[in-house]
Amino acid sequence: ERVAKDARACLWKGYIAPPPSISSLSGSHFSAKVVEVVSGDVLVVANVDGSAERRVNLSSIRAPRMGNERRGQKSEPWAVEAKEFLRQRCIGSTVKVSMEYARKVGGPEAGEAAGSGERTLDFGSVILPMDDKKKAGADVAVPNQLNLAEMLVVRGLATVIRHRGDEDRSLHYDELMQAEQRAIKGKKGVQNKEREAPTHHVNDISQSAPKSKQFLPFLQRAGKAQALVEFVMSGHRLKLTIPKEGVTIAFSLSGVRCPQGGRGDVQGEPFAA
Image (cartoon, rainbow, N blue to C red; front, side):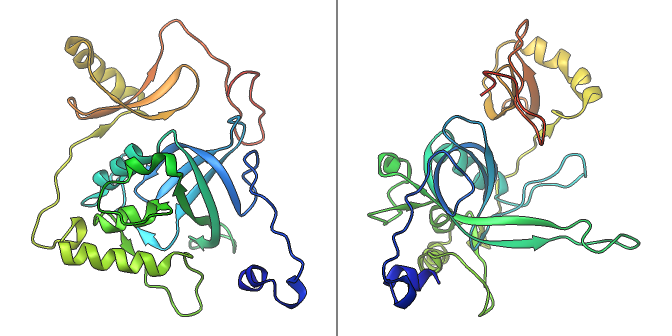
């Protein structure tokens, strides 16, 4: 159908594509600001006024998985590098998003009803605007657009998914395959089997009150420290990673309270965004 629309064939002869909306995240094509980098292939984007957010999985690629402290899962090799590369390139930037397909993952466990445990993941291509081309790096030879997925693959920070013949895939799939071949030839990142991935020891205590209380004296003795903002939870609450201390914490500004944002069906307070 998309091809027929583009070619204005038969029923679509007089078809006029709707312009992308910068205020709505419900369509297939829209502009939005990147507000969180979850992993090397998952972003959270928000509309202009910050009143709505949407989680976007990059189409047709797989980046190494980040660990889960609560489940005792460690990050896969190159996962931290992939996430940090994506954060540096696009956090806070306005990007163009093209949603391409959806996948249902998970499923019911023993004794559960059919359909329980399932969730739908939305996949799309995320393009940086020309103003942010300088963030791409010299080895991404894409003159007219900067595809975040291709930028990851060409550096060996993600691999291309081999889809079945009838599966939906990225509209830029050919470019992704070419980028992967360049990464293999250059032995970049995960494509270099002879090189060990850098090791990282980061203790995430942001969701554990006992661990936070236990670690607080060390941070107090250390004094000032440089940190990376992982996520802005509200006007006065942040999720920070302190590389020197190897820890991720939940941080609140002392003596300040800002309006709370909405969550689920609960409407946010005025001026929260």
